[in-house]
Structure formats: structure tokens, C-alpha cells
Length: 426
Ligand SMILES: Cc1ncc(COP(=O)(O)O)c(C=O)c1O
Image (cartoon, rainbow, N blue to C red; front, side, top):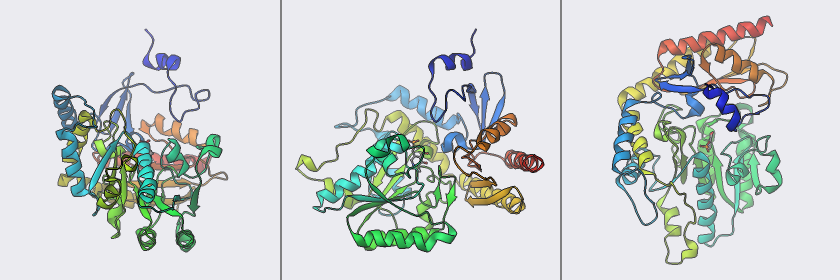
């Protein structure tokens, strides 16, 4: 009988995969804690939380239990004109933990749609208020998703090249790396002074897809402060950073100025199911609260606020808010810091970065890009070691599920050291 892997090749088109040069996919049949297990029984330590989504380990029994109960109670229902306990409860609980000022929860399906809804809210908020500002400011090399609006506010790159002429115009400011902070803040200030800006969108503290590029909370605070001063809406895209990745529950918790809109997905359900949230202030909601139907938000998806998925998110939140989850995040951050210090001067390393549970190591290369040839070599090295790692070009990173043990982390570090040795001798 054909294996899953063989059958896959006949019928599947995988995401972000050059199908001709990378035809093989590992067929996973089971998830358990920090591990994925394939059809031949091989175990892979999930160092990247399966595209940064998993928080508490795979197939967590608490989430599985709550989802199966909900499936038998109410699997799905339309969310326009109807509501249900899981969506309401999840909104209530999210608003308790989100940065201050968030008052309303708008549901969608994933990170990209959470961003789409945020962009539409921000643009229409301005027109509903009778303002003419329509432009969005974003950071160079940002990544906010793959739908058209999300692509438009993302940095122009190989990801967006094929559609470049179809993306709406966005003003990009330089990334605020340590040596570029003043230039980046200055560029934002200049754009805000120029007017016509409806919103500023940003991945707070860590730009994920750009290679886990990190910047300081002080800069984020200044960005937000400037937007406030100029009355420009702030969209915090916490799709990747949300739910504890940077230490506190949200990256925006590192600063005191709150955003106007927060986008969530990935860890929202503990990584078990797709769900998007766009949280906003009462002021934004009120700008759409009108008898005139041209002023309402025309956005929604068939599976908006699916109760089964909301039940998964509630179950994940039960686990997230337990003190031992915070302890685990602290433990991971401390363990990362010790390892980072031990390798930072290594000859093969260009930079080591860490924010909370996210550790990134940039390897030296003459050609630092997403399609750096090193990427496939690195990927295969880690797979051979039983580790799921998806390097971003020459950048390897660990963004683990919080259930990962010290021994498992040490195993990943040990393999990284082995890789560095190999790169040195090659
Ligand atoms: C910051 C950020 N925003 C949005 C997205 C898009 O999320 P999704 O892949 O669920 O559409 C991602 C995905 O990596 C992301 O990192």
C-alpha cells in the first residue's frame, strides 16, 4: 500500500514549498508534547512550535477534551444575528488579559484575516469620522500575512513580487535596529507630520518572518507615542508575539502606551485550530455604530467565531493562565540566555538575538537572504537530528512550545553547537 508521503505527492500542493525541488513531505501521524511522530515512528522535536502556533504541546488532553465536548454540544453556527457561549466567554476572557483599552472582539479565521479586518477597520474608521487620511505606515521587511491587504502592508520581497503592481501604496520606515533607531523614529515622525496617515501597523518587538529581527521596547514606546500625538491609529500585530512568546502575555505589555487595535491568531487556540481575533477600542467600535448601514464594517467569514474553535481557545487559555505556564516561559528565557551567552562569540555566528522564549542565531554568510542556499542544508541537518527547524535563510531560531523540558532544549543547543563545528570545518 502507498504511504501517506507517496499519496501526498499525487494530490497536494504545499504552502511555501518549491514543489519541484522539494517534493518530499514528512507524514506525521501523531503529536505528543513537544514531539511530532511520523508514519515510520520517527520522533521530531518541534523547536518552532509548528510555524509558531503551539503553546502547550501537541494533542494536549485538556484542549482535546474541551473540543470534543463542544463538538457534541454545538459544532458551528452562523455568527451574524446569532451568538453562543464559547465566543462570548472567549471575548470576555481575552479582554481581561489584552493590553488596556481593548473593548470589542472581532473574530476571523487566521492571522492574515485578523490583519485584513484591522486594516479595513482603520481605514473605514477614518472615513466614518469624516477624515480624509487613508495611508498606512509599516516597517520595512514586515510580514503581516498572505492575503492582499496583509501583503500590501508587508515589506516588498520575493513573497510579494508577483503582485507588486496590485498592492496598495504603503509608506515604509526603516527597521529600528540598534544602529538605526533614531532614523526609524525620525522617518515615522516625518510621515506623521506630513498628514494623510490613517494607521501605523507593526509587529511589536520581534519581526518574525524577517528573521526574528528584534528591537527595543523603548523604540516601540516612541512609535506609539508619536502615533498618539498625531491621532493616528496603532495596529499591533501580535499574531506571532501574542500569548507569552516575548515573556509577558503580549509584547505590548513591555510598554505603557497601548495600541488601538490588536491582531491575534497562532497561539490563540494553543496552536490546535485556526482562529483570528481583531480586538479594538470602544472609540473604533463607536465609529461604526450607526443607523446608516454604509457605515458598518462589511467583513465576515463563514466560520467566524466557530464554537468548537472558541472552545479550543478557552481551553488553551486555562493552561496559559496557570502559574506554571509563566514559570515555564521564564525557565525557557533563562535557559536561552545562558546558551546565547555561551555561543555569542563563535566565529560562525553573525548575531545572536533573544526576546523571551524566542532565540535567533544568525549564521555568517556572504549572501544573507531568505533563499540563501544554506537554508536547505540547515533544514536537513536538523531533520536528521530529529528536530523540526525552519530556518529563515541563514537564520536559525527556537520558538518552542512551553512544555519543552530543559533536557529537550539542551539537546537542540547541543545540535546547534555540532552544526557550528561542522560549518567551521567545512
Ligand atoms: C506577525 C504575523 N502576522 C500575520 C501572520 C499571518 O498569519 P497566518 O499565517 O495565520 O495567516 C503571521 C504569520 O506568520 C505573522 O507572523
